[in-house]
Length: 214
Image (tube, rainbow, N blue to C red; front, side, top):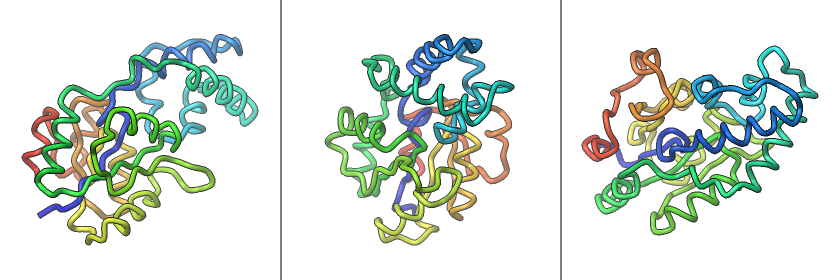
């Protein structure tokens, strides 16, 4: 019986890619790098912000370019209204149902910690999360199990009582490194290779089906 559900954020709880695309393309335009389509951004997501910028820049990736584009992107992103970044339909209802069943809830994301907590506070203020763990330098980011380990320690559960719910290969690797089970959602930014990964316990077809695993 699982007692703790650790959720990824982007692509699992929140549909966030559209604002990312808009702000990244603005930053790339400022520095005269080619823009990407939504589909081209998807394989770049999942890592920490430096990893993402490096993948977005592709052949133009150098430490100097990564830092330059990252700073411009974050300026655009932080100043934007982020109106396209919202929970997937049914997510809050499902979290409330899990909470009512006594399941401990947590979030582990590579999104910068201040940004993660901003969205959680805005949309999930009545959810009592054990811990909301975003990325904060110099702490290691996913797939390092640092955040998961902190959550499990705070929740005071055994690793076999916890499950990680995500949408990408980064989440699979994070689960493996932490030694906990992994469920992958079908509605996020993962691909068929991720869904067929032998480490994945199951692929969740829709948001409301999450409750069936607890």
